Structure formats: C-alpha cells, structure tokens
Amino acid sequence: MLKLETLHRDKYICQYCGENLILENIEDIHLDHFVSKINGGKNEIENMKTSCKRCNCSKNYKDIEIWRSELIKKFNKNISYLNSYGFNFKIVKDYKFYFERK
Ligand SMILES: [Zn+2]
Image 1 (cartoon, rainbow, N blue to C red):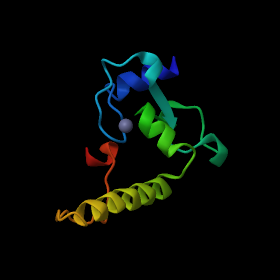
Image 2 (cartoon, helix red, strand yellow):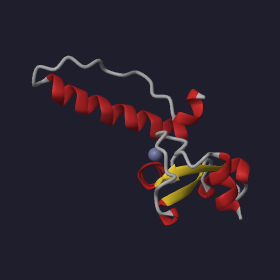
Image 3 (cartoon, protein in one colour):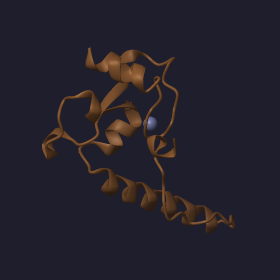
C-alpha cells in the first residue's frame, strides 16, 4: 500500500516541517504529491512525501518554490509585527524544508 510504504520510508516524519507523526491518527497523516497531479505528478512513491495535515493543506497543489516564498513572506510579516513591539527578530531570507536538511 502506497501510504504505508511512504510513511515507513519517511519514518512517520512530516517531510516539510519535521514533525514526528507517529502518535497521530493515521487518518491525520497525509500523503503529499510532491509534484501535484495538476502539474503532472504521478501516484508513485518517488513523488510522495509524508506530510502533516497542516503542511499538506498549506502546500496544496503549489510548486515547492512558490510555497516556500509564501511561507517566508508570512513568517517575515509575523516578525515585523513582533519587532514593532520592540523585539529584534531577524528577517529570514530562506527556509529549508525537513527533507532538504538531511
Ligand atoms: Zn508538517
């Protein structure tokens, strides 16, 4: 079964945020099509990534680079907000997903 194979390969870790999903209900662990079906991605293990619900819903059918720049933008918006209250967080220029950090 594709889902179990993928979860096993990915050790039940969300390949985007790195959250350990082993204690979650299996229904809440999503399989993400890295290249979405809309963009010609196949239903094969090489194109599947274990994902938490949150990352899967946020990424949706987007290309990884588009999703990355959206996340960076959102993150920096939050940082700017906090900095307006006197914090001094650094604006981020890049974000590496879990599968890229290995
Ligand atoms: Zn995640």
